[in-house]
Amino acid sequence: MMLRIESLTKAFGSGANKLHVLKGVDMTIEEGEMVALMGPSGSGKSTLLNIIGGLLAADAGSIALDDRTYGLKGPASVVDVRRNQVGWIFQDFHLIDGLSAIDNVAFALEVAGVSSKEAEQRAIEALERVGLGDRMQFVPEQLSGGQQQRVAIARAIAGERRLLLADEPTGNLDIASAAEVLDLFKSLCADESKSMSILMVTHDPDLASKADRMLLLRDGQTVASDIRSAWGLDEGGEEE
Ligand SMILES: Nc1ncnc2c1ncn2[C@@H]1O[C@H](COP(=O)(O)OP(=O)(O)O)[C@@H](O)[C@H]1O
Ligand SMILES: [Mg+2]
Image (cartoon, rainbow, N blue to C red):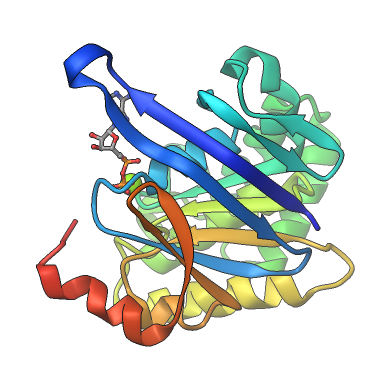
């Protein structure tokens, strides 16, 4: 078991305005597993990822990621989780405009304390793994959206992080590029030499159904979902 979350709760605000977003989330992710997290807009998907990623403290409950347990303390006490254990992928890529693909990846490693020489070597390996070995000197604006997201994925995996958190990673991509990102995720999870797992938020049931497992965040709790109930999510006109 790579990740185990138990009875996790989180509310925002206070008094009459208190908003209970997570009301006892229980979930696990196995090594090598790719899990899709779905749920209506505002249901707490990003909040859950932020807590797992060490960007936000929960109110109660616990998280165990490999041997590390955390969840209730503020971001300052989980620096190690952010630096070493968890990698992030966002909808809008978060690349630095003026830096080439290789420098975007290497820069993130240097910030985490890796020497320049080693950072460059690891960046080359990561970009080759995501199929961008021939685009390393390109800056973001010279790359398609799908290629930019692959640079971001290279950045996220270059630190040998075990768990990738992807918050709507295909939200800005066309259908073909989105499918490519999902295929890349699958191959990363299948690579036993790295033993990674991915937790991905998506609104697209077709993409979610490519994951090993779908979870639905509803009424503050996660429940197992299948493709049919995932499509049912759209019926209320929930849109983001
Ligand atoms: N920092 C915050 N302060 C107050 N309310 C917040 C904060 N972050 C999120 N929320 C609220 O918590 C709910 C869940 O938000 P979020 O996790 O972003 O949902 P999702 O990612 O599923 O769309 C929303 O109602 C949102 O407005
Ligand atoms: Mg969100």
